[in-house]
Length: 386
Ligand code: NDP
Image (tube, rainbow, N blue to C red; front, top):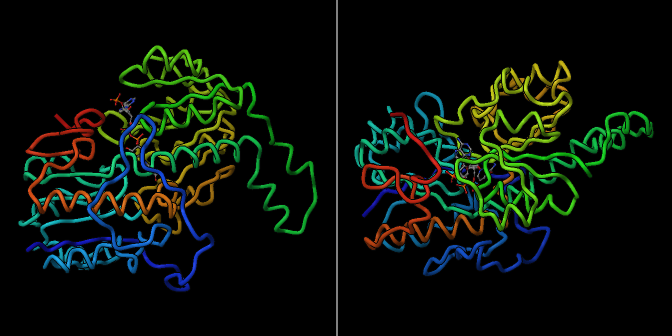
């Protein structure tokens, strides 16, 4: 029997919800491209419930305990003597979400002698040291596609929010004001702008598709080119590298995983190559950009706006400079944890666990590391330190 250690974010400050804003979720059984949404044998939750917080338990308790396993759920994941560190020592499986990542460092992986499986209930397994997972034979799996569209919607929202100066204008209303000029002195139309994505995978391509009807000029860079049909359909311009692409763009959105090739990509040098007054949207991972270089670029006017929901570390400390830099539209890490997304990644986590316990292969598209090497999606989209 296995010990499953699940690290989830805290419940709402006024307690776990007893009712919700809406009564149902749309039924989605396929993602764009045809991959099926998760197919566990059963789930023990109602889609639309809060599942990603401690009391939501990803809907896993009845299933795991019914099968004789032990489930430990905590939000206490960092700092000396955390519950996570204490419980990790004999855990067989760790589950955490990128929004509240249980950082599986080399030291922690070495200390977790029984660890066989690290599940990311979401997408993006950079909180797991993949080199150590490989060398210790730990399988790493994530619920590929579960929240890609959720994030793409967030990117579109943030793009429009920055370009049209939505958040400061909303603040004027909250403050009881009506100075139109204060609102519009930084407000533009997106129409006609050049928008580029760093990476056109599931999220990046979904962003391009969603922005095409705004009559923008679309650009992308990726390690592999999209098909000619897709390039033609969306009128895409491909660039060899981010360095080649950014001078052409009014808006740049980052949709690549964090791995050695992308870490620190947007530093002073690349930011200086962007058009003055460009907007940068990063819902991928904070460490793809240089924290202080972004702050400087906003203060100098090199960037007109920065938005996203990814920080390092998470949770971000109260004095993190991105909380107070000018012209930002940051949120906590929420884009991939809508109630809609939670239903999919909770079901996907259950599907992964069912396969693991039954000794069946985990879907190839969910795998990042398996059998001591990058595998499945991980082999395609990630790199490790050589
Ligand atoms: P995909 O694997 O579908 O796409 C990632 C794309 O990035 C692939 O096309 C990959 O290229 C490309 N890529 C990798 N390295 C580079 C590079 N050095 N330069 C250019 N392109 C590169 O993943 P998703 O689109 O679903 O997710 C992307 C990332 O978004 C996740 O890894 C995660 O970090 C983040 N994310 C954030 C969420 C949030 O809540 N904010 C939620 C979900 C994801 P190729 O395949 O061609 O090698």
